[in-house]
Amino acid sequence: MSDYLRFDPPLVVYEGAGWPLGVRPGRDSGEQVAMSGMSDGYFDYDVRCALTLPRRYAGLDFRPPPRREMANFRIRHVGRWDGEPSRFAEIVTGLARFPERRVPGYKYHAAYALTPFSIIGQTWCERDASQPAYIVDTQIAFFYTFETLIQECYIADAKRTDASTADILAAYEHRYANTRSQPNWLLRDPTKLKLARYANPSIDWDNIRALPENRIIGGGTQGRQARNQRQFLFLSRLQTHLMVAIAVACQGLGNFASGRVRSALARTMNVPPDADALSPHWLGHMIGSYDHAAECADLLLGLARYYEQDLSSEQLRGIPIPPFRSPGSEPDLWSVPSGRPYLDGCTTGDAYDAYRWNLFDPSLDDESVIRWGREAFEWVERSDGKVPPGIKRHSSS
Image 1 (tube, rainbow, N blue to C red):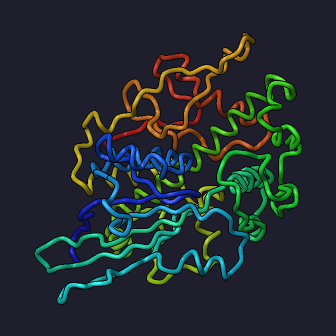
Image 2 (cartoon, rainbow, N blue to C red):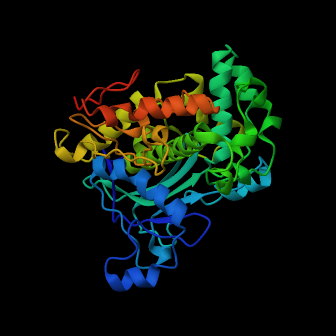
Image 3 (tube, rainbow, N blue to C red):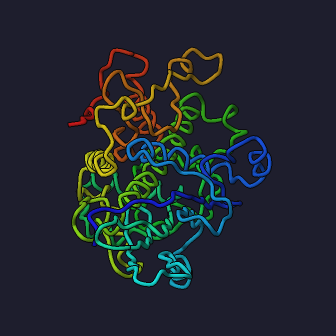
């Protein structure tokens, strides 16, 4: 097998609840107008955010294909799945696709990988020993929903009670439906989940489920702050998990399978995974199998080295996010920064990215998510370059 893999050429499609769309809605004004009705705005925005770091570290140029069937990189949010074997079989079927017309004498390979809440299928081709292999097709099935956030927070509570890893894994349920941070859209009672027995007793489900039009009427200032920060926590986790899947795919599953590239975030296999194999790997960041922030940093730095990017370049530094305050007349509202779900982070020197924001520490209750938000964005208000408690600076070395 060749020493490395490359995308040739990089074309991409994203799938959410609506029509697929590329990173940019067209290369000129005419294409933009023609594609303006094809966007699933919410998930397309999440994909754009998740792509930011892999694009910056790899230097790859993702763009819409001229035709959908020409895309060689697809991301699909699977939406609803309640653990049914038939639905899972439908999801994983065809994740690793070989071209209909194969070139005689070329060697074609396929592999699958698990990353947190994603399954990746990828095929690649070797032309001869003198040329690098190239990616033929990549598909990412993405599973993260608001139900996943709830169970992640339950697990954080469980770890604080010294629950065993075996008990946590046995209690996790494959329940996915709500692709947005709208708790009032939950299809089932989250208190009935098996992991709910570990839940922080201070969780106020009535407040969490409050409709947007009730935000001003009920819940008070703290309720509004908690809802905003809980939404930001959900989007930051969703985009971080998707970023990991994209970064793994960009390095080529063949490199992970052969051992040339290693990451605790990725587990490769030659056949589609069974449903029983998902939870042990998907929950590794929650059960302490590895240091998630450190693994993300290593993955991105490895991606930059793989594509021969200059690690000292300014393009690998974080993009500043100015302080953004919620509108309102209450003085205490104006004292709380409300961050935006970018994965770039803000920096006065070293890159400072969202995967470093202690994403998996808080519980779901109001006090926990508000405290998390304040700590994560305290450095924005201080503007003195200090890092929030428990967070390490990025290193390019």
